Amino acid sequence: MNAENGLPEIASMLRPRPRDAHKGTMGHALLYAGSRGMAGCAMLAAEACLRSGAGKVSVMTDEANRIPLHTAVPEAILWTAAHEATGRSGRLSTSSGRLACYQSMGIGPGIGRSDEVAEVMQEMLLESDMPLVVDADALHLLATHPQMAEPMTGRSVLTPHVGEMRHLAQGFGLPTGDLGDSACQLATTYGLTVVLKGHPTQIFFPDGRSASCPFGNPGMATAGSGDVLTGLVAGLLAQGYPTAEAAMLGVWLHAIAGDYAASESEEECMLARDILRHLPQAFRHLKNAAKM
Image (tube, rainbow, N blue to C red):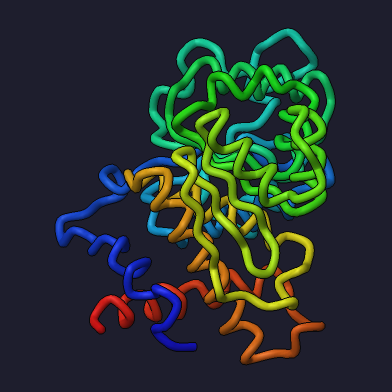
């Protein structure tokens, strides 16, 4: 890896951590992740969010995930259905101002696609205007409920892979022949930042600009890799990075960590946890590039 392909420009976006920083000043992110049997999605996203530099991370998840999450990511705060007196079989609810203490949201990894989940997602979008990243099941819900895009305008990062982008294009009535064109149209029409994951990963901005990340490798095509990216971007948003910068930094850090993982292992053997494990090297790589 080297400093070519605009890496110093990306690296210059990375802010130095204030010497007087404490967990209350580094942002509190909320992740809605992990239905029953999908605790791993929440674990990966939560740890990535914490490793982004966010001061605190809370996870809205199914009560069945409590013990696995507390064990795997003891630093995370849990908000589960069993603690909500909603009268609807323990349904998660964001009513009564529960979202006011957070600076960003990440929605989607492993949450399922039921009507009830769609209702919770809609509540979250309408109750708060904080920046958010939308991935996985939440993208499928958005494709089937395109009206939810309206409250996302100007504050959201969508992170679809090719299949999810095709579903979004169909849901929003966009052409599906060239998914890059579809992602660009989605970004400019609805005021969204769209990260089209692949090799290379492309980022499309509401003003029509785009960027392409030259890093990453086929070993990153593994379950949970996208959950890591979701947590990473949500954590950067919580720290106050503008939406475009959070998306670009998240994509580059994720891809560089993946390349470090591939250099240590074979691509066929890579796990999403390997990307997480190499995030410190990715941050160091960007910091070194900023000095060039």
